[in-house]
Image (cartoon, rainbow, N blue to C red; front, side, top):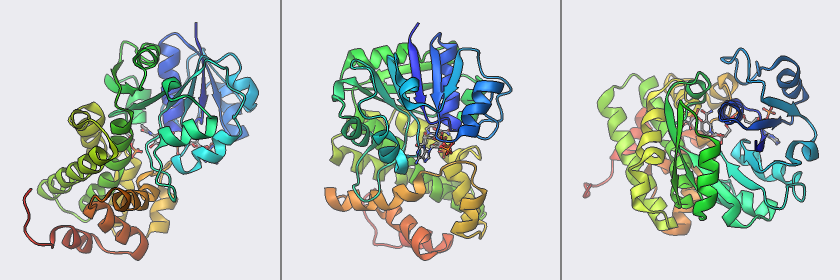
Length: 332
Ligand SMILES: NC(=O)C1=CN([C@@H]2O[C@H](COP(=O)(O)OP(=O)(O)OC[C@H]3O[C@@H](n4cnc5c(N)ncnc54)[C@H](OP(=O)(O)O)[C@@H]3O)[C@@H](O)[C@H]2O)C=CC1
Ligand SMILES: O=C(CO)COP(=O)(O)O
């Protein structure tokens, strides 16, 4: 039986921990909040982050002690809000087993540096890329937590690493596929959140299917162009982690990014939308990082740029759509 440490008992960290326990692993959750650790350890639930689960499997335990969490763990899963990953992981440097594999569930780009989470994780933990895997796909945590059928993609530059992680998280209701395209997976997962903000906003403002499909299709074009410029494989964008996740996130009120955008579209302020958000809406800080990355890579990012005007200058939904589609006629 493999011991798996999950760092960050948020909604997705906890749901994925349950998947790994269901797959037969011994799972130890670590969280910065003592109340969350106590709730998992004493009551077998995480009422603050994943109330939809009444009782976590017996194979899930919790600790607030960093060294204890990762001691003996063959797989260490990182599920921390992307903008805090670096500072949180600093506390684990030097504690991991020498041969442990490290898996990132995070979907975001680091503000300021423009770095993807694979870069942040490997840099911070001083990790060889062959021991790293990213997991990304259409994985709304509440649906996975209630064991609805779903799938994901595990990507690592090392095929054996991807396969080991995929086997460790495959159950009768959750199927993992493998890939070597870490860059593609990271770009898909991060950039679809920006699109989900914009689609949510258009829905909140009362627009229908045509507007949503138009924004979604342009968002896919933008993330594909940026991803390819960063070195991703084009086929990744057409798969589960690309179109698959875009469709799930842009269509569901279970998505925090969609819901954040919806609230803006309804006329709520950024502060109000943040206050009522149940968990991190990664698209908000990632929007600026995408604009910066676009500049670095020489790729135009009209959707992320329009959304950054919404987030920084309070541009309305109508204004965002005009900015996005008001330019000259171009080839699709
Ligand atoms: N929810 C979902 O459906 C999915 C989410 N993801 C991605 O997974 C990642 C985590 O998401 P999710 O679990 O849902 O988010 P939550 O907001 O539910 O949880 C975020 C986690 O990050 C922790 N955290 C935040 N800041 C720090 C810090 N400075 N030090 C240590 N820990 C910190 C939080 O700790 P605490 O709040 O206890 O302080 C919490 O455990 C995100 O990148 C998200 O995009 C990917 C697929 C699906
Ligand atoms: O990434 C997700 C689904 O795949 C979850 O989306 P949110 O972070 O918007 O909730």
